[in-house]
Image 1 (cartoon, rainbow, N blue to C red):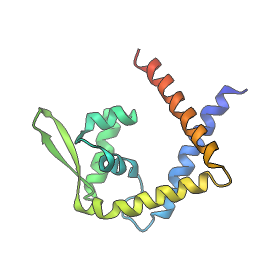
Image 2: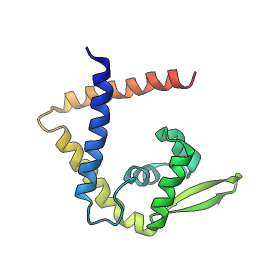
Image 3: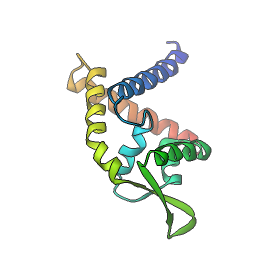
Image 4: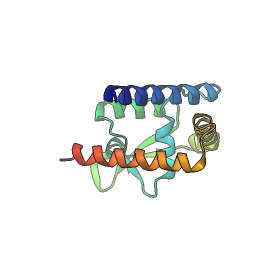
Length: 143
């Protein structure tokens, strides 16, 4: 097996997935970083920029640019973290909350397209394997 092929296919899938999501959401005034909105919406706790960095394995500079972008379109806002004055909590705005049902619907639609002609059992096996691969890499990365 060509191990480089796995990485390439994952990169291509990531880019295609995001391209299809953006195409379906072209009437939205943002064209990227939807995953941050979904992450903020589904989190049981308030997330800081640092939490998002750690969850998505994004460096701090990139995260600041992403939050700046979403903030410039009034989808998120930063508030001072009362537990750490240097940190910022990222909150969804009413505009983001209004857009989220459509964004989530598009994500579900694109996932359905990606897994077309794939049985539910196969999808579950794939997701479980992908989770295991992520855990393996996280274990290695955090050493």
